[in-house]
Image 1 (cartoon, rainbow, N blue to C red):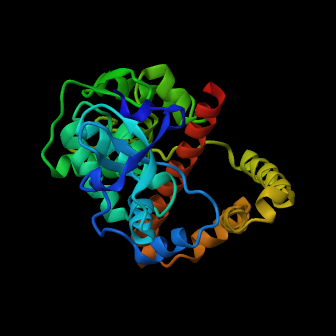
Image 2 (tube, one colour):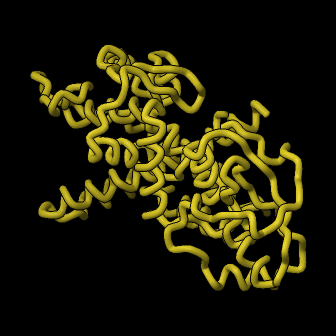
Length: 321
């Protein structure tokens, strides 16, 4: 069973006795949240079926629904069964708990990633990241800390097998980026055969004047030249176009009339300033804070890039469905 490709909603619903169930499979180390249980107890609608690993009768998804049923004094609960190994069941448990209900804490997601790296070492960083709701960079860091040097190849989210040693592909990606800085991460990744996250790392290394391969961050012999996606005058045109798109987004009721939508619009507005304003901000940063502010900017850029990847992946999944 591939736990990342299970169609949960297609599984039949059955009733099962509560006394047969175990919750030791849960990735939620803090146990049940009393407030969330109270919320479920007061719900006026029928709660979704829980997910159970048939071979072990462990609850994969629905820990709080199980607790609420026990508090109500129920003897049975609606459930869907899955097969496969316990390690695959754990992956499903993590995926289910980051997508709905009470989300897993960051600490729980990281612990889950470490466990999945151990049980599925052939999976790529992006595939583990997709299952746990953290970035591929964080997964790679956890993998390094654990001393896991991996196999010669790993399986990506798309099911394709890619070699771990991608030095030649990194060099080819670097050549493409130099020749056409306007290419997107996905365009370069598709042409070269590496992940967009690896392309992002290559682009960052080039911007810092480093070798595109992770060989101890060896500096290039030539003087580094910062990458520029557009000429300055074109940058202002792009800014105006982006502002026009932002105005259309602000008028969209699906965003304007929802709390999450309004938060997103505020975040987008903060970053949608023209080139002159960016220049004014750059000049206003005190020299002794250049490194600190640059570090924060890169961290935020990685967060936005991860956000963009999630949206693109969802769009791809919708198109494929």
